[in-house]
Length: 155
Image (tube, rainbow, N blue to C red; front, side, top):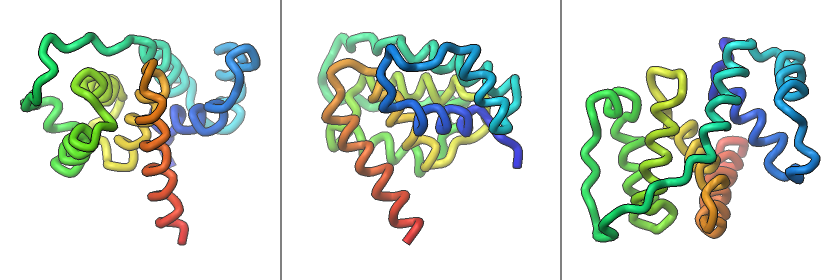
Protein backbone atom coordinates (compact mmCIF):
# COMPACT_ATOMS: atom_id res chain seq x y z
CA UNK A 1 0.00 0.00 0.00
CA UNK A 2 1.35 3.41 -0.91
CA UNK A 3 1.61 5.54 2.19
CA UNK A 4 1.01 9.26 1.81
CA UNK A 5 1.42 12.41 3.86
CA UNK A 6 -1.96 11.94 5.56
CA UNK A 7 -0.92 8.48 6.77
CA UNK A 8 2.27 9.94 8.28
CA UNK A 9 0.29 12.74 9.93
CA UNK A 10 -2.22 10.28 11.37
CA UNK A 11 0.58 8.11 12.75
CA UNK A 12 2.19 11.11 14.44
CA UNK A 13 -1.09 12.45 15.75
CA UNK A 14 -2.22 9.12 17.16
CA UNK A 15 1.14 8.36 18.76
CA UNK A 16 2.18 11.78 20.05
CA UNK A 17 -0.99 13.77 20.76
CA UNK A 18 -0.84 13.13 24.51
CA UNK A 19 2.93 13.48 24.77
CA UNK A 20 4.17 16.34 26.92
CA UNK A 21 5.96 18.98 24.83
CA UNK A 22 9.21 18.41 26.76
CA UNK A 23 9.08 14.66 26.00
CA UNK A 24 8.39 14.91 22.27
CA UNK A 25 11.29 13.64 20.17
CA UNK A 26 13.08 15.98 17.82
CA UNK A 27 12.58 15.74 14.06
CA UNK A 28 15.64 13.51 13.52
CA UNK A 29 14.34 10.92 15.98
CA UNK A 30 10.85 11.17 14.47
CA UNK A 31 12.23 10.72 10.95
CA UNK A 32 14.15 7.60 12.02
CA UNK A 33 11.08 6.14 13.77
CA UNK A 34 8.83 6.87 10.79
CA UNK A 35 11.30 5.29 8.37
CA UNK A 36 11.55 2.22 10.62
CA UNK A 37 7.76 1.70 10.48
CA UNK A 38 7.81 1.93 6.69
CA UNK A 39 7.11 5.51 5.66
CA UNK A 40 9.02 7.00 2.76
CA UNK A 41 11.48 9.83 3.36
CA UNK A 42 9.70 12.26 1.02
CA UNK A 43 6.33 11.78 2.74
CA UNK A 44 7.97 12.14 6.16
CA UNK A 45 9.54 15.47 5.21
CA UNK A 46 6.28 16.75 3.71
CA UNK A 47 4.34 15.73 6.84
CA UNK A 48 6.81 17.42 9.19
CA UNK A 49 6.74 20.56 7.07
CA UNK A 50 2.91 20.44 7.08
CA UNK A 51 2.97 20.27 10.89
CA UNK A 52 5.51 23.09 11.14
CA UNK A 53 3.13 25.28 9.17
CA UNK A 54 0.24 24.28 11.43
CA UNK A 55 1.34 26.88 13.95
CA UNK A 56 -0.12 29.55 11.69
CA UNK A 57 -3.15 30.89 13.52
CA UNK A 58 -6.22 31.93 11.61
CA UNK A 59 -6.43 35.60 10.80
CA UNK A 60 -9.39 37.20 12.53
CA UNK A 61 -12.25 37.88 10.18
CA UNK A 62 -13.19 41.50 9.66
CA UNK A 63 -16.82 40.58 9.88
CA UNK A 64 -18.34 37.94 12.17
CA UNK A 65 -21.67 37.72 10.38
CA UNK A 66 -22.73 34.59 8.57
CA UNK A 67 -20.80 34.31 5.35
CA UNK A 68 -21.11 32.19 2.28
CA UNK A 69 -17.91 30.42 1.26
CA UNK A 70 -17.30 30.26 -2.48
CA UNK A 71 -14.75 27.57 -3.27
CA UNK A 72 -12.08 28.04 -5.91
CA UNK A 73 -11.91 25.47 -8.72
CA UNK A 74 -8.83 23.83 -7.24
CA UNK A 75 -10.61 23.53 -3.86
CA UNK A 76 -13.64 21.99 -5.58
CA UNK A 77 -11.35 19.39 -7.13
CA UNK A 78 -9.81 18.48 -3.78
CA UNK A 79 -12.96 18.65 -1.63
CA UNK A 80 -15.98 16.78 -2.96
CA UNK A 81 -19.55 17.77 -2.12
CA UNK A 82 -19.63 15.50 0.94
CA UNK A 83 -16.52 17.18 2.40
CA UNK A 84 -17.79 20.68 1.66
CA UNK A 85 -21.13 19.82 3.24
CA UNK A 86 -19.36 18.48 6.31
CA UNK A 87 -17.38 21.71 6.68
CA UNK A 88 -20.65 23.65 6.49
CA UNK A 89 -22.19 21.34 9.11
CA UNK A 90 -19.23 21.83 11.46
CA UNK A 91 -19.52 25.58 11.04
CA UNK A 92 -23.27 25.54 11.68
CA UNK A 93 -22.93 23.55 14.92
CA UNK A 94 -20.09 25.77 16.15
CA UNK A 95 -17.15 23.37 15.90
CA UNK A 96 -15.56 25.60 13.27
CA UNK A 97 -15.73 29.34 13.04
CA UNK A 98 -14.97 31.27 9.85
CA UNK A 99 -11.28 31.63 10.67
CA UNK A 100 -10.76 28.01 11.66
CA UNK A 101 -12.65 26.82 8.58
CA UNK A 102 -10.18 28.75 6.45
CA UNK A 103 -7.22 27.18 8.26
CA UNK A 104 -8.74 23.72 7.64
CA UNK A 105 -9.16 24.48 3.93
CA UNK A 106 -5.62 25.89 3.73
CA UNK A 107 -4.20 22.77 5.44
CA UNK A 108 -6.17 20.47 3.12
CA UNK A 109 -4.81 22.35 0.13
CA UNK A 110 -1.28 21.95 1.53
CA UNK A 111 -1.59 18.16 1.51
CA UNK A 112 0.12 16.24 -1.25
CA UNK A 113 -3.02 14.56 -2.59
CA UNK A 114 -5.41 15.06 -5.49
CA UNK A 115 -8.53 14.36 -3.47
CA UNK A 116 -9.42 14.05 0.18
CA UNK A 117 -12.15 11.83 1.55
CA UNK A 118 -14.44 12.60 4.48
CA UNK A 119 -12.50 10.53 7.01
CA UNK A 120 -9.27 12.29 6.07
CA UNK A 121 -10.99 15.66 6.32
CA UNK A 122 -12.20 14.82 9.83
CA UNK A 123 -8.63 14.10 10.89
CA UNK A 124 -7.39 17.36 9.36
CA UNK A 125 -10.11 19.26 11.26
CA UNK A 126 -9.09 17.48 14.45
CA UNK A 127 -5.42 18.37 13.95
CA UNK A 128 -6.22 22.01 13.15
CA UNK A 129 -8.43 22.36 16.25
CA UNK A 130 -5.70 20.80 18.39
CA UNK A 131 -3.27 23.54 17.32
CA UNK A 132 -5.70 26.47 17.60
CA UNK A 133 -5.66 28.22 20.99
CA UNK A 134 -9.03 28.56 22.66
CA UNK A 135 -10.63 25.75 20.63
CA UNK A 136 -10.40 23.03 23.28
CA UNK A 137 -14.17 22.46 23.52
CA UNK A 138 -14.48 22.23 19.74
CA UNK A 139 -11.51 19.85 19.68
CA UNK A 140 -13.14 17.59 22.30
CA UNK A 141 -16.40 17.58 20.36
CA UNK A 142 -14.63 16.76 17.10
CA UNK A 143 -12.52 14.10 18.79
CA UNK A 144 -15.73 12.39 19.94
CA UNK A 145 -17.10 12.56 16.39
CA UNK A 146 -13.97 11.03 14.86
CA UNK A 147 -13.58 8.24 17.40
CA UNK A 148 -17.31 7.45 17.53
CA UNK A 149 -17.23 7.05 13.75
CA UNK A 150 -14.22 4.72 14.05
CA UNK A 151 -16.03 2.55 16.64
CA UNK A 152 -19.08 2.31 14.39
CA UNK A 153 -16.88 0.98 11.58
CA UNK A 154 -15.20 -1.57 13.87
CA UNK A 155 -18.49 -2.91 15.22
